[in-house]
Image (cartoon, one colour):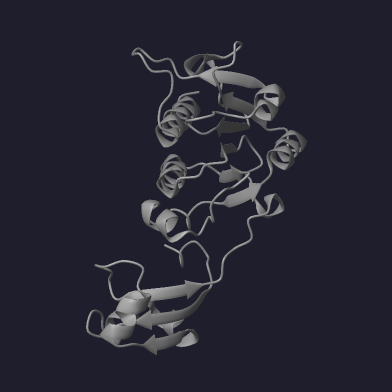
Length: 228
């Protein structure tokens, strides 16, 4: 998925007792001839592998820039997911999976607290960290970017002026913004937004896991765009 996402492969380290060179050749084709290949023993491989039960291959890639200026958005009505200050790699990985599943045009992390290429994020995203357009910046920089590009800022918030997400029109250029479960979104987001929304809940709680909330909002936007 990293190769499909356009990431540049630099080095492959493999354990021949788990995976053969011919298998790598079958999977990677001609790209393998332009890549440094290092064969290691069981002892060495077990020292450098991040976890047990791997497939015998470790790859080193060049990372991509995560600047806002690197994003390439469609000219008509892009759909962007923004998450402010997520901390847990599992949640961040799930957000990348959700953005991929919904076909979001970009995933932006505001005020990141964790390395986007953290191994646990790669694992929990099941590779979707490579399939999304990703950017990271401060909240103020992202707000400026969205406004300059005439993208509606719609924040998931328990603000007094919040309306149901099902009463919102997501068919225009839209950035859906979610915060952490513990503190929600910062005031800078809620006061700069074009609209604040809530997900109507029928039980006793007033919040859900951030990746679950993001999935509900993204797929409501997808539903509207598929049924204009």
